[in-house]
Length: 264
Image 1 (cartoon, rainbow, N blue to C red):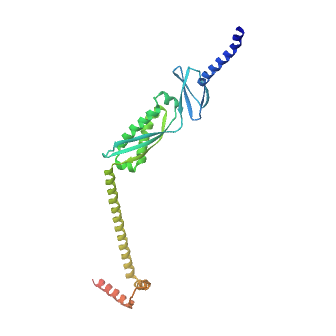
Image 2: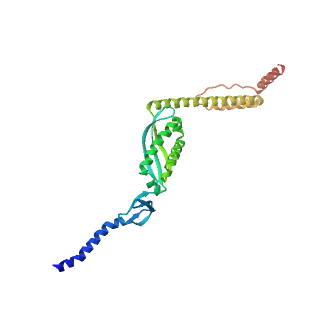
């Protein structure tokens, strides 16, 4: 019996060692990816930031917090906001940020992801409430920049850098949509009338230039007359009569008109 116990003792030691290794190795050895860092605490006190790659810890004494250094996104849920000109709109946004200091992201704020999300929501409501609807719709980049600067300034002590902020959608009430549609229609009518008036003005100016040219060069009248005859002759169903009109008669009228101007 004693011999059996002696034979079992080595196996007991081996099993014990294997069990201890199975328990301790996961606590001792960690492998971090390229984009990960480990904030190490020893007995509750900050020790260092380690990674990436293979790191060794003291079991039950060291504790780590993993931090992702990639660009992360936050979807800011749609919120009802009243703009400065008292228009109620629903807006949502997306925030892109990354951790640049893993130590501060863990120590300075509790759950930096949640904290940044709540800060982004509050900032979105604040900035949209300070601008008018036209500015929100036409100058979206300016509004995005304001929100980004405020969030970035607030999260800088947390070791977080806000890369960009994008206001994705602005939902207007139905009555405001109808008002804007009518406004756009009136604006289109105004532009059409202005373009038509400019065309009439240019056409009138060209006619005046043509009249002055024909007055100074009577032969131009005859050339225009011949061109008109050619255009009319191209019409297959047209019937017309050709009436000779001597250029000397035009010259007489021109000299007569010049004489009257000189007398007056």
